[in-house]
Picture (cartoon, rainbow, N blue to C red):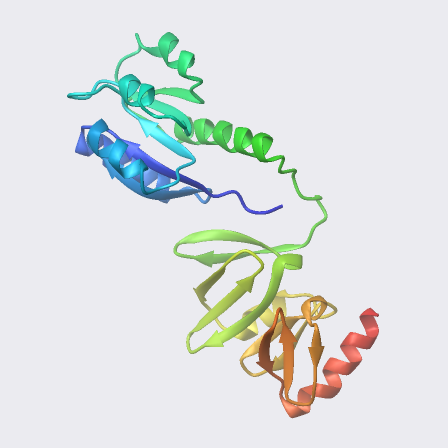
Length: 237
C-alpha cells in the first residue's frame, strides 16, 4: 500500500493552541504540515495556493468564525474541529466534520481523530491495505520510524555518513551505514553491486559490464560484482 500522507493546516487564533496541534502533527507519520493561520481571512488566501487534505479548525475566531470560513470554501477538505466549546458539536457535523475535539487536546484523542481522516481518505481513493505478508523494514528518518515496503524500494546509495533511500514514491536520507542495511535486506532480492549501492534485483531493467539501469537511471557496477549479479539474476528467473 502506498503510504498515506495527508497535507494539513491549522487554523486557530490562539498561538499556544496552534503550537500544541502543530507538535502533534509533526509527531504523526501520516501528516504533513503545510501552514498554520491565526484567522479565517489568511486561511482563505492561503488555500488559493495550496491543495489541502485536512484542516484542524477552531470555531470562535475574530472577523470570521470557523463555520463562516467553511461556508466560503467551494471545495472543502476534511475537517477536524478543535475548540474549547462543546455547544457547537451538533452544528459541526452539519459540515461533515471528521471529528470534534475538545481542548485541551490529548495525543490519544488527536490520533483517534486522525485515524478517522485516514480511513475516509482511503475509502475515497479506494486504497486497500497491503497483504500482511508483504515484506518491509523500518527506517528511522527525522526522528520518525518509516515503514519501507521492499517491493517499492529501488535502491539505496551511500552518501558519506548517510544513506539515501530511493523508492517508487519518494527519496529520503537517513543517518546510517550501508552495512547495516545490507544485513537487514534479504540477499535473494537485494545485492550490493558497488561500494555505494545496494539494488533491488527485481527493479533492474538492463546492465552491462559497467552499469546497471533502474528506471532509466544508470548506477555503477563494480567489476568484481558482475559475476555476483549474473548469478543472483539467474536465481530469480
